[in-house]
Amino acid sequence: MAQFRIYPNPGMKKSEIPYLVSIQNDHITSRTRATVVIPLRANALPVEIMAPLVEVPGQGLFVLSTDEIFAIDTARLKHPVGMLNPADRAKIKPALDKVIGEY
Image (tube, rainbow, N blue to C red; front, side):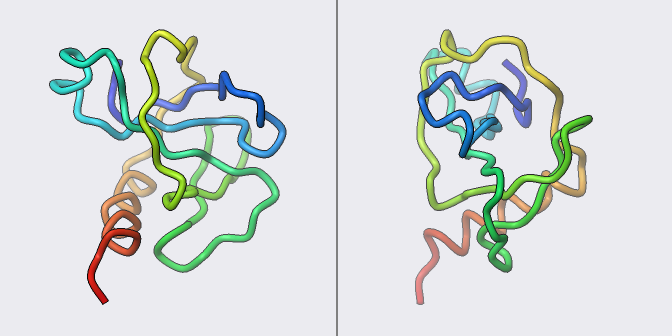
């Protein structure tokens, strides 16, 4: 399972959250059989730094809903639809810092 791959959401909220992006390091994922994902929301408003817009290849722009980060069993993620491009990957660390940083 490659880091930054985008998967269809296997859960019940597919219309609100059509995709999940795997952000966990492959080294860890291969040992735990789970991966940390960030939901990609449709029809949501972006929030500066914390919830930026990212592109799903061939599908358009979605909001990286960083405050909804969670882990999922890798067996539930099937058939990736693409990968985040380098510019969108660079948005993840600042978004995570915004969510878990000290104020």
